[in-house]
Image (cartoon, rainbow, N blue to C red; front, side, top):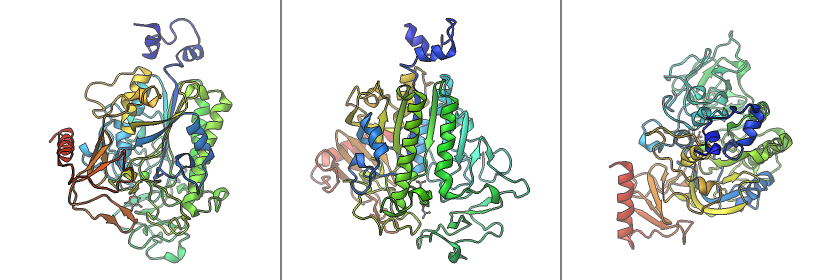
Length: 508
Ligand code: NG6
Ligand code: CA
């Protein structure tokens, strides 16, 4: 075995009497720091480097210009929990029950005895951390004591350090957890959480809409316990000192991410930085207010762009930007009205969050899972735009290859090694991609088949075309990216081929 491979396997890192720092310098070619930045509900057309003209995102444009901007990059699913489950485990979420959007009191759904993205890095000697949105459940059951050590969670699936919020910004409990413990909790004011029955005396949005600074949208709930003038999904009581202030969530996450990077600048590290923007409730810091001209959703995107820029600046200042691979992507497509009357619709001003794509969050159509997807590794990756089909599902197998840390047989069953596409050495990514919304779609050679579904074709409350239709749909994405022409009746053979392929991948 070659010397370099042995280093990659972590077998001879400091055997030659060199300092740990020198050893890590020698192995930089195969053991870069990895930062995966995942936005929440950011659409394919939301960044200026992806064609947006009504909003400018200079930092993400710079990141894209310094690396690869993928035009066919995907999250696994059209909502958060299943997408992130796949990113962590390398397994399609539709193979496992209970991986739909989770309430804030759900139990952990990521297995603790299997390979995950963070424990892959951990085994290879990386320092690992998550900062940001988790939304994969905590503890072993719904009923849990939020006032003690809340586990298992991110620390039990491979993150050496965690600073998270449990679910989404619109769900209780609206608190941060740092390594099992709710941050700033006063033991005299314990937290209780309930998703079915009101607990405690806190006013709810339903009873007291006059107390709200952001009204919830009719018919969409978000009118339970009021925290920071915003009605949430679910009820909580107690933990008054621990509750976050929405306007500070982003800067809190940024500070924690920066501290982790600063502390581990000399080790290889893996940071999963899960931003909350532009998910609802959109309540960015004052410095971004009214800056986009597109209302709070646009302002939240500016805050996201700023955050990524601050991380890029830090890497440069520390002199580690050439030894750090950054992935930037989103967990699902865009939505405007997702529960609050925040003017996302009325102030849109011609902005197209999904770009030319049809559909959005929750949708089987292309905007559900085709999202911004950027990989930068200055000095190693040559800047370009790539049309390779790439997926977050493949981080596990591809990074396993990159760092030389094998995956035990049976783990990460759906993850494919597409490292050459991620590094820009090949235009070939996945041969077959499955897109997951309320129904499954399969894409091969530019043909997309959407399985028939009885669900509504249009989700009225959120104003999104779902892609549901009782008949099969077939689109030629190479010629018809906007999925305007259903070619199923003209191409019954293609429909049959793709439907059967999908069934066999599902194991039917
Ligand atoms: C939906 C919520 C929406 C959002 C979403 C999860 C309603 C009516 N809508 O059920 O507001 O929270 O779940 O978003 O409750 S995600 O990005 O985490 O998947
Ligand atoms: Ca999301």
